[in-house]
Length: 200
Image (cartoon, rainbow, N blue to C red; front, side, top):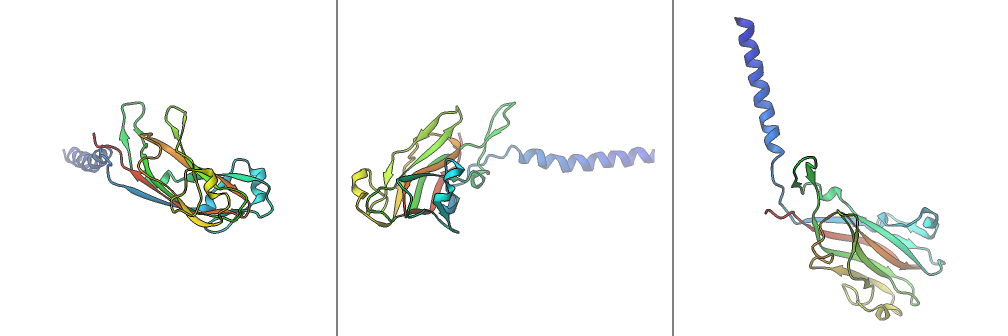
């Protein structure tokens, strides 16, 4: 009879360890907002062949001074920084990590007075389509300008800002910035504000 008693005790211990782990999987993650800060050094061109026209510093990416025209750069918004936001789904999709981007600020420099720097946000939606924000142009006004002609003759450092759900109600796991950058100009850093999943 003694061996049976020991076996029952072992089963009781295993059950008490597993129970809290199962309970943790059903927790609702609804904290936030989450601030995701990224270096402009992460921005890359569409194809690697044009990397030779770029300078990547520790905190920036700049187009070389002798580049002809504008270089298109893509800057990712880190998904890892939002991994604690989750929505529970029914099987077979156990969890989807999609949230909403509400604000973004980019610091950039325009070194040419014969070109204009512009950027827009994009998000890959769960149905496969791409959503875009309005395009903003770097100019002397903090936050940027909506008119491309405003910043043509301007040079200097300023910010581009999107606020109030610039991508509408698009909920995604994959966002980024797409920027058209003239020669001798570059992107320094950017900060995104991510809202948590709704609680209902």
